Length: 525
Image (cartoon, rainbow, N blue to C red; front, side):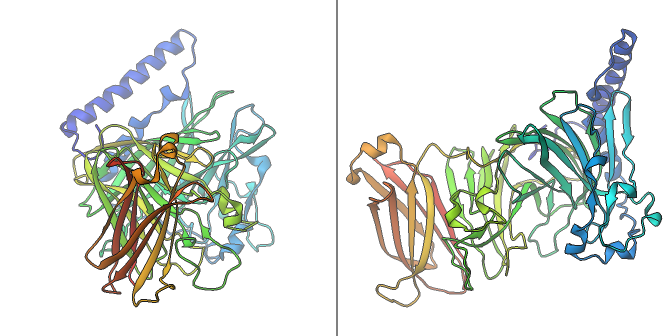
């Protein structure tokens, strides 16, 4: 099965296959024990076990989690919640010679729901119990005695990714279905989610949440690690398997089986959330010592027919939704292309080290669209950018769907097209001629191939398109001497200031594309 199409198999056939798989695992495990071989965790637990739970949830009414968080924890501010620290010496698997350790998040503030966390071994799955004495509450007036059985809000995976002597955070699950990962030399930036439901729909967004996790106990020397998760919400439940491979580029292989409980207007697959406040493409509305503030500066898409698109991000004044329709996409992701420290001048947050995330679909996802949702934000504390895949046909009740994809959390080795890339986008008023409602764009295409560098300037041309809400007044293409790249300058007049303008442009040589397509939405004023 692949996401985007019904399975084609009757439900009872699929479920019998899952039951048969569990029987075979049990039989094989018993045979290995008989021969004196201890089966590994994968034989004791698998995605099919979680899928059985998810299917059962979808067949019943949705049950909201109990609101049992003590008032003292619910009333915490963000700063107060940050004072609750998990004690490093209490990390799960510490001192056992294993490559990873687990640390846990306390419940409090908006993280008010408990998630059950289990360890998977050859003997089966066993819950990791909450203990208040594993946390340091700092100066907070929190009495740990009534917290027995409170449960965790989430967990962190620690692995020696930057230096052999220190196990750093490489993966975090905390809040709804949110998670984040890091590669070597990166700092936290954008987030991912297990699923997005009805994002930017008039009915309001639904936030599915992971309600239970199973973490396989790794073998000594292991370099990849498996986490299973059970997702639930009023409209959908799901079973997930995450295979984490930390490194200079950390990858997560995701497999999910979804079971719709009710009709879904819009399903977002492999959703990514990020922040864009201002940058070279949109200056700060207020005086700021930093030239740019963002976790990501654009959305890259490799369509099903191999077309590469670059969509610079904006901080609009009101909701802005755009999409690119395609079948069987080859990849998409929110990217932080600008890696110069001087572009941000921020010592604390290090926006130049924020990861990019590239989504690689596995199998045939079918027809659909990559959707970009951009919201206004007054500061950098809010994620105002979302990107995800929307299948043409969402799962229907009684029809299981399976999706697979690889996530690449990268910095130094971006997944770039085999063409000229859009290096930067700048826009502003036409100060030279001061014509009313005119806007000037400067788009630089760089990372030039040797073949194009040897070609004469007369051999390179531009193809551009402006929608009906603007008139293109002038278009010029020139070779930049400073960097050796190509600058496309566009001068246009917007007709209706209250409506967006869609722009597209790419470079050609001998009438063949030699650059990715600059795909831009100028937001309404």
